[in-house]
Length: 122
Image 1 (cartoon, rainbow, N blue to C red):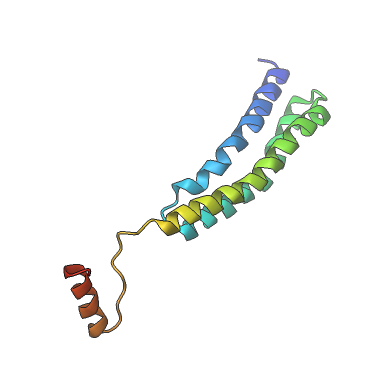
Image 2 (image 1 turned 30 degrees about the horizontal axis):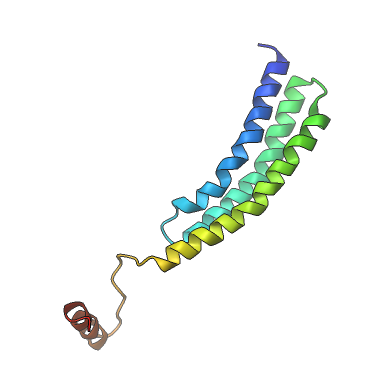
């Protein structure tokens, strides 16, 4: 395996990996979790790309880094913009679905009211 093969493999990884980032917020259980996953995904997109790209270019030293950056950077920036929209859609869907958690009641009268609604919803 030559250094150019490793560079090609790293470039394929860097090209196809960002397609998974907009999926991450959909694995959250609550709307706030979708946004937190989005923040994490954006941080990884911003921090991981330069690290892997510089490692791949330095290690292979094939001189193709300038060409690869013009192909890969727009893809990563595009998905860095798409991911918050995906998180917004996921958070909106999670906010609309009802949770199985019972409502939190502070006083005994509120608890009795909730119990009454559970027995007779109308």
